[in-house]
Image (cartoon, rainbow, N blue to C red):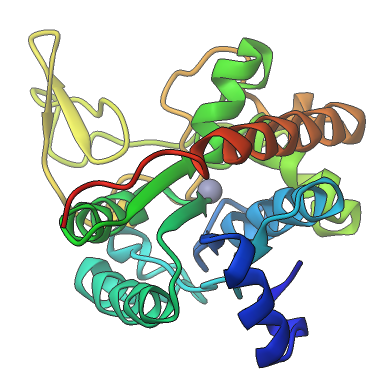
Length: 260
Ligand SMILES: [Zn+2]
């Protein structure tokens, strides 16, 4: 049941029976030459459409923008920043709370959003509500280790194929991960914005454009090459995650709320 397709009477009727709502959150950001900018939005939307086919739970409109400051500079990437996401999500959840929603389920598509979502969830828990954060790409890798992956790799390519196969640019699927030691030979590139010094990881926040030409960063996750993607695996993956979240919501919705 999509909130935006209901009228206010249907929302009132829903709130007499339930206080749970799903909020999909994405991002618009570079994912390499082979993937669309909306990757992190399309996959949560696909998962939520599958949840909608089997669950009673209401789904709020998707937040299409994310906190992705580190990818700004690749044409088309637009970040609302950590603070922007906290502000937007707080406004949305405060108003849903005022109507009576108390169990919030975020279906998140982008790692950079988690700081903001955590912060809002923490505040909600202190006013008698709970937020569950479903980071789909991490859950997928736990549900089936073969689905595990990173930014722009096989896992996300599979998700995009499940959403719309025409959005994958097949001529770029053989792309090599193209990282450089932008902080010099002594501080070699490690993962995302971290470097690796004497076998230990240190994070140095900086634009990802200084690390890679194409924005595809799987940072050494095995078996996560985009060329190995398949629509069949993608469909199984998004269905597996949707099934898991649907079942989780049945249990989560019944949890006793925290003290205010
Ligand atoms: Zn992504």
